[in-house]
Length: 192
Image (cartoon, rainbow, N blue to C red; front, side, top):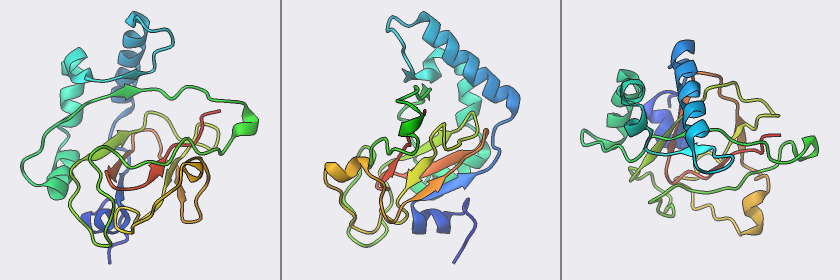
């Protein structure tokens, strides 16, 4: 049983994988600059989520998604027929006051997730979340309910914004990437 959080065995068992220090400081700075450029030219006030960024900045984004470490792992998860659904640059806005520190942003499974049946199934999709700064309790760590892509864990609407007894908090650092199975229950934590 592998304990390496970047292994396929760990991903299949736990529902997520962590790759440390995938991107260099200059690449992360270029991603941040691109986000600021898109934000400055956006018609929306206080825009923070930009999809389809491959079309907006192909010279920057294509090498990011073509990273051999990520592509090799992606093929291990899905197989050789990968399809990029979206490339997004997002910044999580400050939500609330310091008193809101540690609040759950909202448990969810991602698009095309099927409710778990008790056995691992290959995901129909997965996320590869790139972190451009260190996550702390104030910035809001990633919350994961390990193995919830296998175990049939369900949450009521009220429970979707509450800490879960089985959750773990993950504190990625700048340059890290976290892969999540689309059936994994996960949430952000409010950025205060």
